[in-house]
Length: 192
Ligand SMILES: [Fe+2]
Ligand SMILES: [Fe+2]
Image (cartoon, rainbow, N blue to C red; front, side, top):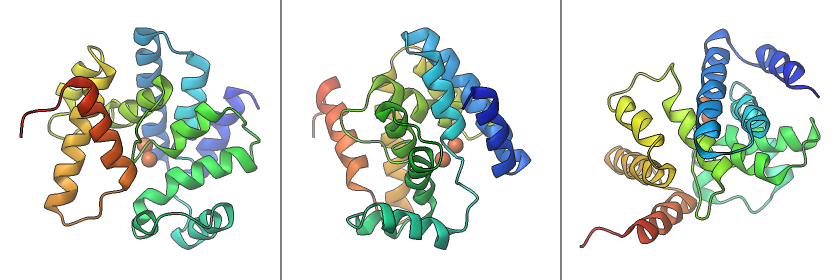
């Protein structure tokens, strides 16, 4: 499937607003790919795929998840907004026959992150949160930081995400905590 075909498929699968977001993520991922010497084609493919199943019904997504992996953690199963990252990767592999593990992981971990993410995975995670359509308070700071250091930007974003999750009384996926701890150790944790 060419990237033009993938883009068209994407357009069919999601609302206009979400499609604009996906194109924004694609553009941001291209900029980060150039900055950090990542493969642009892979970034484009992962960006186009990252939210492709986001508008599927949760029940249908849950069926896809359980069919593909019966060991999915309870924390993820309780967090419906996270389903689309898993189902996006399943859809990419099973329906579109995309075999590149790095692309599949970039889709799979774009919401929760994980320890030991590849450059492509970090680019998609960050591009998703800093695309042009994102307007939340602090987005400019993250956008700027992402061009200085992917790792520092990831760490700051994870801190922010975890703070918000705790404040709202939400569950925190183990992969998110592992991502936070491993980046903290690499970059030098703050003293307790
Ligand atoms: Fe997403
Ligand atoms: Fe997204």
